[in-house]
Image 1 (cartoon, helix red, strand yellow):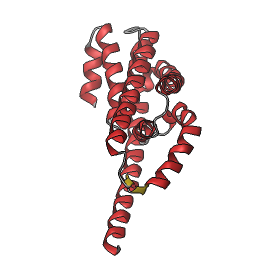
Image 2 (tube, rainbow, N blue to C red):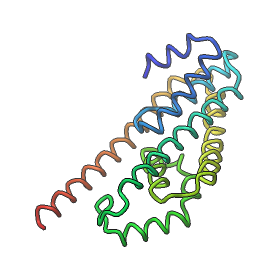
Image 3 (cartoon, rainbow, N blue to C red):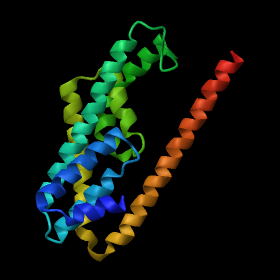
Length: 200
C-alpha cells in the first residue's frame, strides 16, 4: 500500500485521478483493498495543490459506484443460474424468498448507507443482485451513498496537513480490525455449516 501511495504522489494530476478512481473501484471488488485510504490521500494531495478536490471527489465517486454495480450485476447473473434449485446459498427456497422480499423493501436504504459497513460492502452489492433490485434505483442509491461518504473522506483528506502519517496509520489499523472481524465471522459460519452437514 505504501508503494501505491508513493506512486500516486509522484504522478501528474490526471494519473492521480485515475489511480483514485481505480482504487475505489477495486475496493468494491476486493474488500481488503483500502480504497478509502487512496481517496483520503488524493484529497490530501489536493490540499497541497497537487490535484483539484473536485477531481478527487468525482473520480472516487464514479469508481466506487461502478465497482458496486459490477458486483450487483455479478449477483444478478449468479442468481439466474441458480434459479430452479431447491437450495440457494444454504437456504431453502422459502427462506431465500422471505429474505429477498425484505431486501427489496429496505435494500435501497441499505445500499445508501452501505459505505458505513466496511467489510460487508461487497455482500450488500451481491445481495442486491441476488434480490433482483431495480437496476436504475440501485445505481441511484449506490451513487448517493458513495457521493455522501466521499464528501467526508475528501474533507478529511484536505484538512490533514502534516497529520497524514498519523491518520494513515489509524485508518489502516481500522481496516485491519474490520477485516479480521469479518474473517472470524466467516470462519464461524463455515464451521457451523460443516458441523450441520456432519450431524445430518
